[in-house]
Image 1 (tube, rainbow, N blue to C red):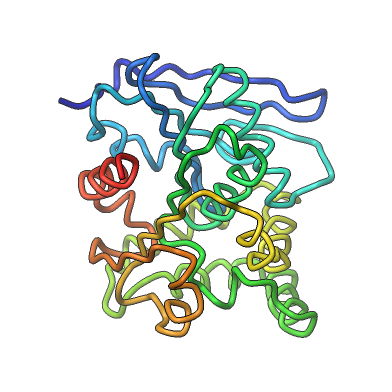
Image 2: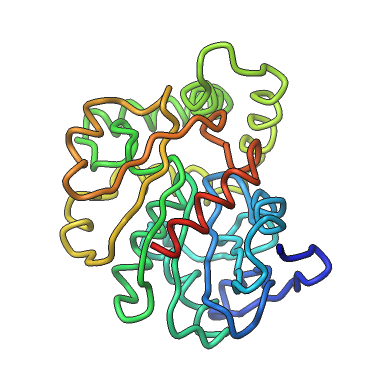
Length: 266
């Protein structure tokens, strides 16, 4: 059995005068909670079809991070930690006692931070093609950070196109790449630019040392660098999958739902 789209409720929580977070709640209200966090420049609706394939006894919360999707914010802080507080506000509003938190891409970093922020609530973290891109996730030195941010500041569209190309296996559907590009390049500013910089400055190694929950990473086989697997294989449970591109939750919702359900029950 799976949930149905008719059971999804669009809700919002006001964090403060500067931030309102919108999210979708579905499934059984008293079921085990699974929280879904989208990637950079995307939104919670990337998980709509995934949610339709999840077990009907599970409670599912899909969150729009600040200035993504329907969420709005005028705040000045765009770190992974602050995004985690967006998610924590939803968990508090929904009175969630225990949850598995899953994030795609940048959302994987946010999911780890939610685990660090709420160690008594988050039982497991799942990263969907996240944490294993060595040019984005471990903290970059100043020279690397400056070079990347110079590209985005000089030609934002070219920077976004580079992200899409880097997340696409050889020969991947050009029309889909264009669709991802058009969605991501329209990310609201200044959140888009500042959150990219925050991600490349994020000290993942330090955060992982402080995060106690088990972390499962589902990484696209054709994109996962062996160096990343070697570097983090003793801390992360890295599972290589063949479900499409970096955006595989959109491309393979049924397969993604199975991965999530199996990992959440592990």
